[in-house]
Structures are given as structure tokens and as C-alpha cells.
Amino acid sequence: MGCDIHLFVEKKINGKWLAVKGVNEPEIKEAEEFIENIKARGESADYWEKRIEELRQGTQGYIWDGRHYLLFEALAGVRANHEITPISEPKGLPEDISAEVKDSAEGWGGDGHSHSYLTAAELNAYKWDQTIAREGFVNVHQFKEFQEKGSPSGWCGSVGGGGVRHVTNHKMKKQIEDDFPFGDSSSYYTLVRWEKSLREALGSFCSWSLPELNKLVEGNPENVRIVFWFDN
Image (cartoon, rainbow, N blue to C red; front, side, top):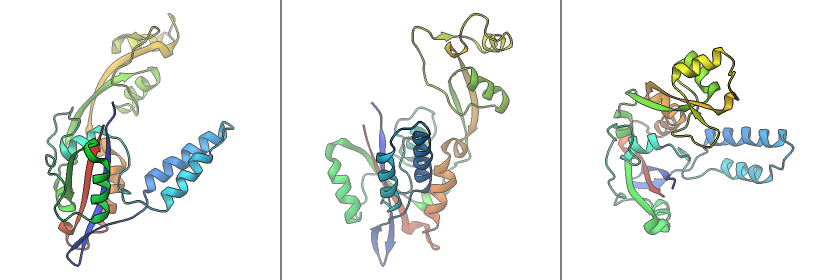
């Protein structure tokens, strides 16, 4: 079963923590590209066009609205798999939480877990540039990308099925050179390993979300924080 995060931004104003609204620009861009692809196939995009208008109105959770287990591990040690040290183990909800975020958390009841919060100061102090080891199964196109760039843009944790063939990296290279004389190239998968920085792996969270959060700081990173929890 998948795990999702519910993340809100709060800012202390006149001694009181308040929920901050904003627009999640990366999510809107992703939705726009999705709508474009749907229309290119001649299908209806009514649902997504309505959804994108909702996104443009702003939400409390604008800094992040996605599923990235590596991020969950960095924030609170949730879904840990890469042996990185989290910023903090879950702290629970802050005692001075804003009313809006408190209501949302209570609405999840027992389905919400690992509640926590982190200030902008804590987030800024974390070692986002640490190197992590990654691995995954790739198909022929992803393997070619791996050879050219040192890492694939997509991969699977596991892959199976009647037509799937697991081969070594050497075998995959040979099959590519021979233009797959023994079958369809789409059936071949191989396990690859690579390293990259955590910052690069987390993409828009580090390139967009953290800078957006820091725009709210105004000289005191202790007065801005994220409050979050997870559900399965």
C-alpha cells in the first residue's frame, strides 16, 4: 500500500502561528502537460481542467503535494530505505499549531501517522548535497540513457511477468549491439546502480519548494515551518 504526505506551511505573525496559502507551480505545470497529452489523444480533459483551476486558487499544502519516499525518509525517517539520517524523528504536532492545520490533522484521525514539524532553519541546515546510492531495473531505452548520462530518468524497483527477461548489464549491451536478434527489446530488463546527490534526486522540492519557503522567512527562519503527517 502506498504512503502519502499531508504537508502545510505555517508562519508566526504577531506571536501566532497561521497557515499560509500559495500556488503549487510545479504541480500546475505537471497538470498542464497532462492535459495537453490527453487532448492530443482526442480524449476529454474536463476533470483535469477543473482540477487545475482548483490548484490555481491556492492551497495550504502548496509547498509539496506528491509522493516521494526519499523525501519522506529525509523529513522524518518514514519509508526508510536508503540509510540516510532524517532531519528529525517524528515530533508529533506542535502545541501551538494553527487552527486550520489542526482541523485537517484531526480529520485524518487514526489514519494519519508520524506527525511532525520542521522550521525553515532546520530544513536549511540539512545536508541536501549528500550522496546517495540508488538502484533499479531498467529497460533498453533507460539503459541507453544510463550509459550516456550515468543515471536513468526512470526505473522500477522490481519487474516481472511471463515475457520479462532479466539479463546482466553485459548481456544488455550485447543485445543492443546485435539489435536484439532473439526477441523484442521491450522484454529485456537489467539491474543498474548509480550515485547522485539527494538534492538532485528530490528535484522540485529542493529547486522550488525550499526557495519558496525561504521567501517567507524575512530574516527569521525559526518563524516559518512545515507541519506534516502521513497516511497509508
